[in-house]
Length: 486
Image 1 (cartoon, rainbow, N blue to C red):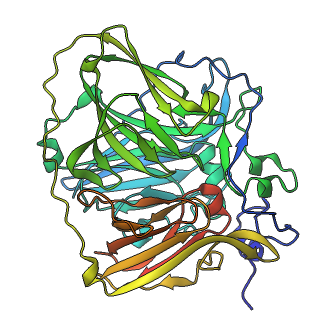
Image 2 (cartoon, one colour; image 1 turned 90 degrees about the vertical axis):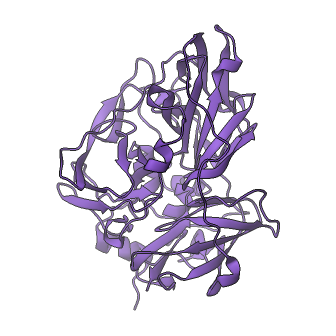
Image 3 (tube, rainbow, N blue to C red; image 1 turned 60 degrees about the vertical axis):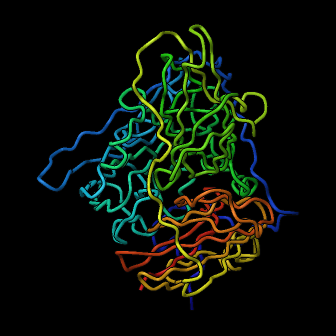
């Protein structure tokens, strides 16, 4: 007899937090939507806190071909809200963790040291990674233990990020602070005259809610029966953090800046706008073939975009707000740039950025369907793929190494879908092909009642991986499927 989900959790030592779909959960009327978890701490004044830039991690040692890093997960306190101390779980005790800057084709080894009281799993989001280092959700690093993750980085330059990936607990553990940026560079990108140095900024954006004493609020941390199920549509916070600071401000020169935007929220999507033109140069999988000028960028949880903003278009003394057009009230603000000085600027955005191979769907060996929906699970309601909850031992697909495949993704409500191992290209959205040349993605947002077709090819590594919804509450409540590259 197959164990139930609760029995499997107990066997794996995953604790006793209530899981959606366990016995006793009632069916919810309608499809649950993300819910705002309002905190009790006074909301800080916007733009009163300087933007922090996370520390760049240094290798503990390097050889001719390999850089070795250590990330120690530990409990700490951080001043996220002015004047309050917030208990966090952080890589290196910080929120977010340090930024790792690596180079394409140079092996990076990260030793994860778990000094927390719970198991963890490390996932390099967007990494082209062997299965034993990909962060399969049941490959646990126990409290007091450590594990080495090997990242060969045989992939293009790109803005990646790393975060916890523990089965059924990714939401609360990322909410507590287990996330950080991982930037991959290469010779092609370095040859371009893009903004660099202090004008190349990683911006990890997330929302959180706080108690009056500064503690983070999260339904699964409250211990009240039924609380987590009430938020199974996803958890929204009422404070927008950028690099761990609430609605911060950055003082800038009248020059071009590269903003590496990462949506690290559990469930919130952003429509980011400065009110003026932005030049998008990159997506999840690295540089676009050519820049495109946009007025806003939509990012679902897990998605990234690299944009260049030219502040020479503004006068000294002007302020430029980065706003969230998908939010209301305080959640419509993200951060502000204060233009304060003139400086020379020799950067530029060339008309051609990169060569992006277009995968040919006509050469696909197979077309697979993946349906993302809510449904009955163990007598309650959960989030399912193809009508089934996640089973770590069941393979939903077995693609062959090197084959091109088309995957058809269909949703009931909004689901940002993330595929591990290799990037993909979007073929169509509700039957309509996207404009412009192809781009590489690892996360795509399915909107309500939408079908998105993607084309992909899995290379280099055989083994088991997952695809899942990157609304972390959906992921934790079983919206994940395993596949094996053979």
